[in-house]
Length: 129
Image (cartoon, rainbow, N blue to C red; front, side, top):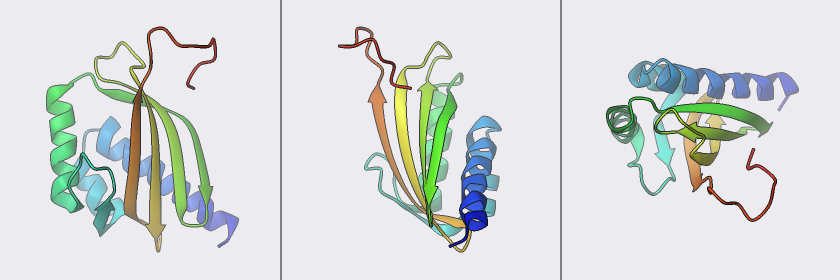
């Protein structure tokens, strides 16, 4: 895979996230940036389009000030990994997030996600970001 293809995969993930979550248009993002299958490995979210759309709507409904800040993205071949800070209330960050996407022919095909609370009293002075 060429470095241009890897960069295109990174941009696809960025555009998917911005459209789905920053602009609050998950259906448009799903249709444009996924291959339609969207195999979900996060055990809290159902597979496929219906699961993705329901999860997005539940998040927006329960947490109207929910937002995220991408801290870094790394990619290799068809995999793109993202490290982000997210907040439910707008006063954050409240969680550290690691997401991995697998792309196939330039479209998102699979997702893995891990969410960890940011502690109020960490054991060290290093940040999670």
